[in-house]
Image 1 (cartoon, rainbow, N blue to C red):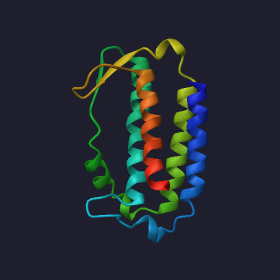
Image 2: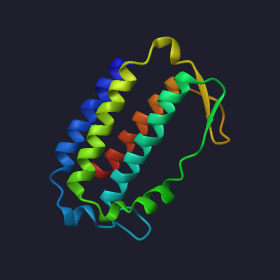
Image 3: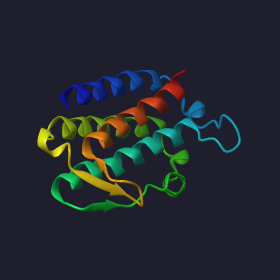
Image 4: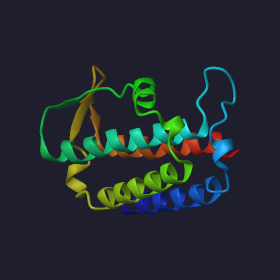
Length: 146
């Protein structure tokens, strides 16, 4: 997990350096009707970090764990990321993911096989959840940085 945590920190630092060059006005643009702005995408990634942070910790503490699904459109709308400062969103996203990398790096190997259920989905392992989180984050970054 240390390698994955190091990869997460590196990904975040590289992405933040590139995203910081985006102006406030450009961060608010909608690429197409029904698509999120950069602010909303970073907000979504903050929400993903928040939801997964809870999962990473709770699955280590409890057995037979079922946690709610993440309602992404509702979370983005309720928090109104579109009207938040671009630089503050980026700083929070970077800081939160640096903390998650710390959490990931400190998970004991024997905990990685613990399972949980998200919503009505199938049981998944903590290891799968962590790998999926990092892949999801990287996928969004590839979309917005290319």
